[in-house]
Amino acid sequence: MLVKNPQFEISAVSPKQYPQNDLPQIVLVGKSNVGKSSFINTMINRKKLARTSSEPGKTRQINFYNIDQKFYFVDLPGYGYSKMSKQEQVKVGEFIEEYLSKTNKISLIIFLIDIRHSPTENDKLMYNYIINTKRPFLLVANKADKIAPTKVLDTCLSLQKEINPLMDATILPFSSEKKIYTDEVWNFIEMILRT
Ligand SMILES: Nc1nc2c(ncn2[C@@H]2O[C@H](COP(=O)(O)OP(=O)(O)OP(=O)(O)O)[C@@H](O)[C@H]2O)c(=O)[nH]1
Ligand SMILES: [Mg+2]
Image 1: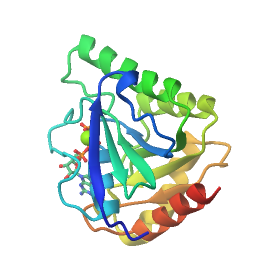
Image 2: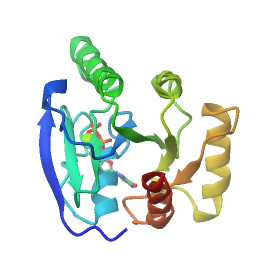
Image 3: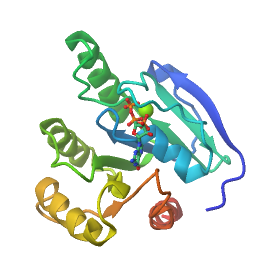
């Protein structure tokens, strides 16, 4: 997809601030620092529209990016950031859950995991939560630049076995660093937006 005019629309802290129009929402979910905000920037080819940081815990609100009036990318805070106080971690968890449960406009959940590591306990909890929402979802193994290109597909397969033993989901590699595999992800998104 050729994105022409992506715009930051709102940072929401409560459901009444979520956009009230009917545009489909494509939401990024994953642990802190896995690269959700960078993923949005890479997909829309903008360096800094979504705020990123090498320090985990950068995104604390629910940020809606309006993509050419066609759909939203929704950037959620990451879970599992150990330096956050327990109270803050609980707040982030509630935030994520509130968003996922209170909007009926989610067309796709893009679930990012780190290609270098086995899914964490929190990843597995999130996976089960996502399955229960019954929404379409896509598993993305991010930071694929960190492993040898020849190992990427095998690694995706073994990660999928761990997190999705039924092997009925789609998993795609991705890298914001190298800007590779974006076409594959766009194909998936376009297929979802057509249905
Ligand atoms: N090597 C590599 N680094 C990446 C990639 N994607 C993101 N990063 C880096 O990972 C760090 C975190 O990226 P963010 O996009 O801010 O991560 P996030 O998931 O939005 O983090 P939170 O907002 O804390 O939940 C930054 O230093 C990015 O430059 C990637 O594909 N490859
Ligand atoms: Mg972020």
